Every structure is written in structure tokens, then in C-alpha cells.
Image (cartoon, rainbow, N blue to C red; front, side, top):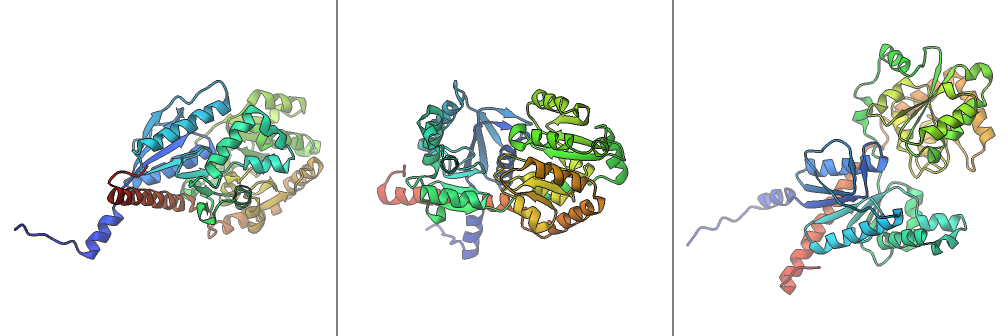
Length: 412
């Protein structure tokens, strides 16, 4: 008889801990400077580094190749945005039927997902708050609401990884979601990216010069794409409203992708066209935090606002609107000013002028923010999210195995 070697309890635990899974990540499009896209990439890379096989399905990949990820381009395009999302929804459902993956992770609201991650406002909640539910009769909104219900509704078993407490509560209330389906994640600020190479005083001056900012001028910074949503026009008008002497000392630098021409025109009409510069998307964003004197973020809507925390980590004082999901961190840290909602332009103009003329207070805000971020849990989003993804993959595989054993066929 052959000798049977029974594995010890420790060996079984090791084998169990080393289990690897096939993971599908689905996102409508990937571009290098999008916030949601960066989060997707970080989740995917950490999963791949842990030994899991990660395939990213996307309609477009605008960024460098990732050797540890398998990227498949799928044509989701249709003649309308909501049609594109409906096509993505159909793709995910078909992907699930194929049963090739232990877990399907999505970054857009569609049906058929095992895990959803996102930071957008709940559309149904937004329409209810604005008393605009009549929009649900339009094809575009009807499609988006149906897709949202497919991901969030009580008939779905998709687990939701959310990053804004108020939105988590809104979604739970509106869609009657079981508490165990919602996972509220902490922010996922990349500490190493921000503090790896802080600029020296000399490097800071040289960096500022490349954007026309001299040593005796004030560099006001905004970071983010979608310029209307981020309130770039609000920033331009506020700078234009400063006293002539102060205005001459300010340069406004906007980092991100958006409609430059429209906002250049706004700046020229406001009389500060020569004091506003758009850099486009940049890989060296941390340098801007260290080079600037103030970050302004007068957003019209912002579910979270990671740039606010990134600025605090770098010791840069912040002025932001109170509708930003992460605005409360500014208050907790004492790292700047939060403008209450609804937005009051006169008030914002006053606050901007006041902080720009108070060097001591800006320094205090910067110091407070940096010290607060040394111990606050604003970094662990990716690690905790990956744990949720892997646990769902494990449950799915165990469920299939149980169904095979009891029914003699695979679970569908």
C-alpha cells in the first residue's frame, strides 16, 4: 500500500493562506490622471503583488503598461454615455455567466458585480434632494437609475466599498441595503508618493520659476480634472476680486485635465489672464504641493477630495468648500478653512484675501495639517479594500465547491 502523508494543521493553514484567486477588474475607461482610475490601479497592483491573477477589462487604457496586470480592451462605445454604461452592464453579466473569475470588481455602477468601489454621489438621492425626480422619465436618467438599482438594490448581493460616510448612509437608506453589504473604507492617501522626495528650499524656488512664480509672489494651487466641478471659475473670480496690490503678487496654477480654453477666456475677461496657468495632467503633483503657498478647492460637488488630504500631508494650508466629503479632516487637523454651504462668493473672496495676507496663520495651518496626518488613519483604503475583495473571492470559490459537492454540478 502506498504511504499516505497527512498534512499537519500548520501545513494546511499555510496552504490555505497561500490560496490565489482570479480577479476581474472592470472600469469603463482608464486614464492616468483620473482619481477613480488611480484607485483602481492601486487595488489591482496590490492584488497582483499578492500573487492573484488580475485581468482589467476597460474600454480604453490611456497610461503606461502594467507588467503585472493583464489588460483587455473591450469596445463599450455606443452613441450615448448611458448606452455605453448599459453595454458595460451587459458585458459584466456575461462575464459572470462564464464563471472564469473568482471575483468581479467594478468601478462603475452596473449589475453582476461581486464588489463595487466608487465615490460618486447616489444619483437617486441627489435627484430627491434637488426635487428633480421628474428627470427619471428621460432615457438618460432612467438608464442610470436602473443601473444604480442593479448594483445597490435589495435584490443585488454586490458588496459596496464606499469612502464617504454620508453617501454610505444615503445609499443604505434609499436602497434598504443590508448593513453587511456596505464597507466604509478610510481614505487611501499614498504617503510614500507624497513624502518620498520633498523639495528643498532651492528646489522649491527653481520649480516655482518654471511656472513664472518668483520668490516674492504667492502661488495658489488647485489640483483636479473637470474644471467646472472643481470650481476653477470660482477661484479665478476670487483672485480677480483681490486688492490690486495683492492681486499683483498672486499666481494661480491649475494642475489637471479640462477645458483650458474656456477657463483661459474666463481669466482674461476677469483681467488676470496672465496670472493663471494650466499645466495639464502631471505625474509630479507632490512637487506642486511643496511649491505652493495655498491650495484652494471651491468645488461645486466633491464626494471625497483626496487632494485636500494630500495637501495636508505636505504641510500646505487649504481652503475648501464644505460639500467636500473630506472637508471635516481640514477642521480636525486645523489645517485650513472650510467654507460653509451654500457657497457664498463674497465670503470666499474675503477668506482668500485674509489668509493670503497672513503668513503666520498659513504657516500654522501647514504645520497643524502635517502633524495631524502623521498619525491619522488616512492611508489604509487599499489594504482594507483588497482584504474585502479577497474574502469575497474566497466565499465565491467555497460556494461553488459546496454546490459541486451537493448537486454534482457547478453553481451558477
